[in-house]
Length: 184
Image (cartoon, rainbow, N blue to C red; front, side):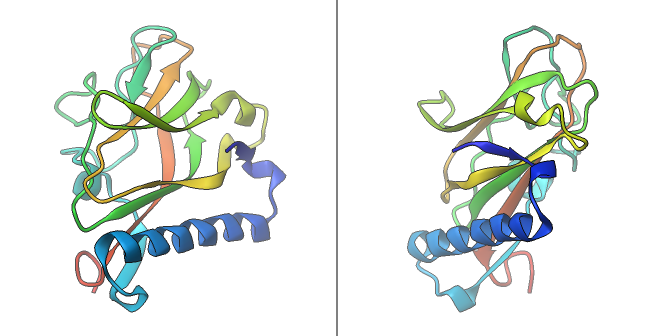
């Protein structure tokens, strides 16, 4: 699994990677939720509703206080220095397909998708410096990174600059869930 800079992809390739993420997520949800494809819908993730970022409907990491340290991509408004390790609801599948770093200069070097509060399993690691020399600091994953219902999402970035501030690291993520849960 690798990250492909957005500038190196055509619009058709970007659409295919997003479509593949949706299809893999729906296929996974059919198995994990026991629902038919017609009973499922997909949407972009909502940080508060899906990941528990109380008071913060935006992508901000925990405060980057030290170099070569891992920080959660999720925080709350009340505790920006403390990262979250959210648990996915029992009726949702999450599929991550891209990342964009909006903070300039890019203060993070790696993006790691891990499973469990203690990060027992690493699902994927992406080198974010691969997207720095591009016009847009954004990249698509060659394969989507899925999480199943009730998985604990331990998604972190590794800092390369101790900014003493949060970084805007935006993840492309679809939530697949039964129709009527969020969208009718």
